[in-house]
Image (cartoon, rainbow over all chains, first blue to last red; front, top):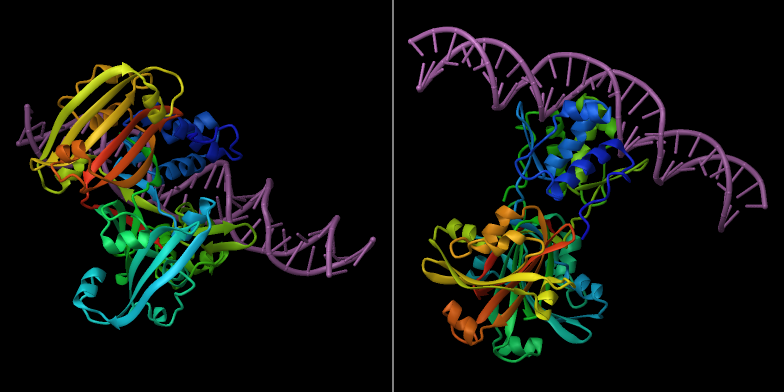
Length: 242
Length: 242
DNA sequence: TTGACTTATATGTCTAGACATATAATCGTA
DNA sequence: TACGATTATATGTCTAGACATATAAGTCAA
């Protein structure tokens, strides 16, 4: 909940300068649009060289707290309220972080030529082979989420022979295909018969849906749909408005 | 969808060095754990001074793409799959971005001494005054979301006299209380009678719920619950696994 | 083998300069 | 007054050094 460390306990000068300025911005002493002191003024105030001041200001600019304009100076930016940091843990990590025991069960696994529906879901045009996986995650033996996943074998051929009966496909992919990009869509549905049975909830009960589409350098990797019973998921966002 | 700009079109040397390395990391040529060349090796390769190389590597470290260890070198980090960038636009921005007409309607506004429930929702202990606001957002005259908000007047006294009949409280707060922090919780519910009527959907239909709790320097600002009909919301995350 | 000490080395920070460049502000002119 | 050219200035990038410091690796003794 604290904003930043105090300037005093910064061991190095440029960090102290950065913390000084950051504190004034985050407390509102210097509101959005405020011009912060010029580099040469800070040089004088802190009795250091311009490169030291420049390093502090460059980092603040990289963190989008200030905007720097040639000849004009450096200005406090308005918070980017449209973006926030979302924390979606790997399901196993999510469950063990709660101090609960993690359980995993492979429900089904099929290797097949991509159907039209598969290609649509993966966003690819060419036909190819895919693995379709259905599995269930549980916490303390209680169903936590069901997962329905498609992996594009033309991008991840190893997935054809991977053993998903013990390791969840999400964890497996994490270790075999790092540094991917993803797009998430969140929505809500009511449980149908199959979902209700898989999650051990009533038909018609609310479910949270997270669809994740993952790619890497313009190659589709996987598409997954996660269904959670209507319980909440926590996210934490910093430096936003409203 | 493209990972980064090519190194060639970087106008300055340190940006070119940074882009060169970033590209090798993101394409997987240098996998997590890989030791990237030492500063003195890069100095030789690019024919520049160490400060220039250092600036490139420092920025990569600040972006969490690499980890730097004294005496050991610099190493490609594993992707932080547990965090992603969430884009939650201001509702008005969200609707206008879709090219639809935005509508706003204040349903109710009450100024009162905080009840026990209010204090619990705001996470404050001391009793004080609050404003409770209920309103509805629509897109092309169709209900888009209903909002139920509490503002702590001890932190935002101006909210007592603000006119929320024309400006949504979220937008008002954005302009009056910048640089806040927030925590989000997402969940799913089924619509009860009141919700169903407000959103013009059937009783029992699924709804997406976003609860947002906002503070600033250890002072609570506002708590809001947004209810959307079960339609999806898109988020975009970069550089994740799984 | 283990633990303590020493050494080598890569990064971390900083300096006092330099020239480049975008642009706000000024000045001059039509 | 409006527009175009000039100038001043803050930031952007870069250099060739310096010393500090954490720590991997090697050394030596118990």
